[in-house]
Length: 102
Length: 158
Image 1 (cartoon, chains in turn yellow, orange):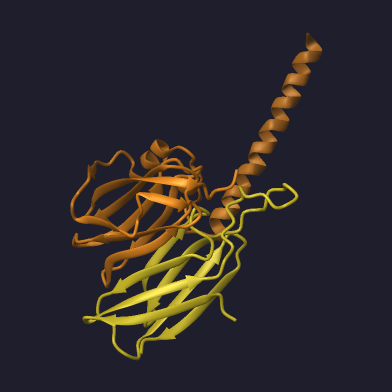
Image 2 (tube, rainbow over the protein chains, first blue to last red):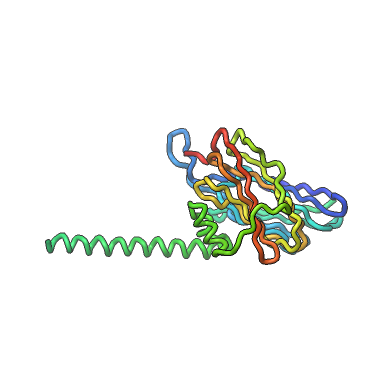
């Protein structure tokens, strides 16, 4: 199952894009039950594409919450347009998901 | 005397070699994730981060065209602090979110294209009570807005 959930909603001619990503976002400062530090593992970069054109590029650090949530407002946007959201983390893992506006 | 000098030089050499390897690691990381700016995200002092990001450019404070929504006065849990930024400037290109007292103040940087309205939400982690600072870049100028958030339980470990 993809780690990315995308929901879109048409609002007065604009499109609200909401996304929830399943990711631990460890900043390297937390400790496990044995008192050892959990190594840093967080998303570094996230980007949103609308019909293959990049509209948002977000750089972030471990100070974003676990399972990060973002929302953006796209000007315009038609039914049937595609929204693609992708991320890459500091261990070079990556995921991507495509969504069609309904 | 001679012996201690030899030791000193030896230490110096090994230290130089160590910093060289450290340096090459940094180079490697920047190539792997080219647009992620490791340096600005790893700075640990707020003023240094600001100086590094904006290079001494003027920051216009408390402009009423930047609005915060959802950001609470008192956050019970520092691990999840919601924030929504709404701004009515034209030609917004970037939005920065910083938390002043976090171990690394810079939290996120959004690069927005012209087809996106400046309405962005995210959820932050806060180590302790701190100012949350949002800086918007619009038409080459920087606008800053600050709000203090009290945190009951920190979310950055320790």
